[in-house]
Image (cartoon, rainbow, N blue to C red; front, top):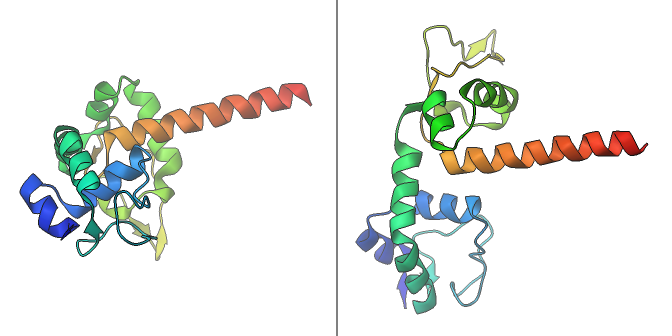
Length: 161
């Protein structure tokens, strides 16, 4: 049995890519068919993996490589919106709403963006031209869809009561 680190090097994938891909697409890595011991926070390079997991990774290799290119490329909110078939202004508004739930290092700073003021993180209104990096278009699409569903359910619940 080999470790994830040994195997993933042959795939040309980062460990973070595999973990993020599995999180976004809700794959369960805590499956005894895949790993030899329970993993709480994600797979590590020293995690021993089974042949079944190696086979699954090989099957998903092209998708994971596309996911990795998407995750590490710098692009505007408008580019992401076009890729996932959303209105660029709506996506900019959505990212503005959820910005405190995102890592600070995803934003390629626009000239008018202030990270902090007096030690406090500043809420910012993003534009379709704002550049982002180290974020998955697929993850944004999933989060956007979940939020839209939550809002619809909230509205329906208010109508009922």
